[in-house]
Length: 222
Ligand SMILES: [Mg+2]
Image (cartoon, rainbow, N blue to C red; front, side, top):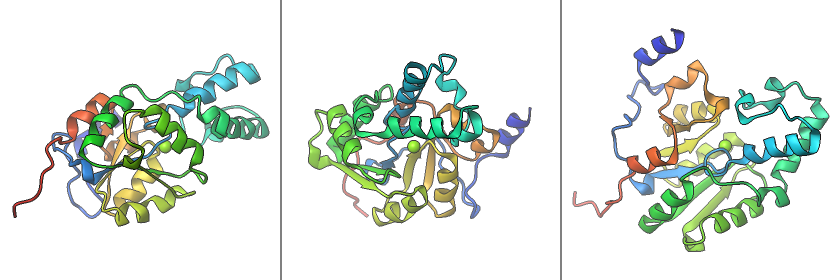
């Protein structure tokens, strides 16, 4: 019930402007993407490693109910830190499956301009290699990756790139973007299914996202 009442309130930016209606079409040049949890199903590898290396056979992705894994998993802190590091290392980054439909939609969008990715990873090399492998039909010059090291640093990069819409799975980052005039599109994951997330348009999957992006972005006549 509480969730429904949030929905009726209707999403709004903090400065009072209406958020994008999901019926609105987005121009490809105004859109950029987070990578982990949006394009890359990184936590699928986390769960596999937890089950195979640590015997946490009970774990599924649905157990990851918060972005802060320490807050939602009853696992020794050192073990959890080790597991997170292993998931993000070069070897295991290359084993991450793409989110369903991501490669198809991104390959199509690359025909309309460069794909812009902004990640909070510190070292982008392994995820750049992963993107090239995941998008073999996209010319590497059309894949632009900006690694900020911190989620809070994403706003500055996105503003420089004149990005209006950003697909992101971390709720706190969505809030920050919204406060800075960038429209977050919250990519659905178990860790962002909380009542306060209704402030942002939720992208259920890549097929839905693909339908919201215009393929006919031409020169402006005005
Ligand atoms: Mg992410």
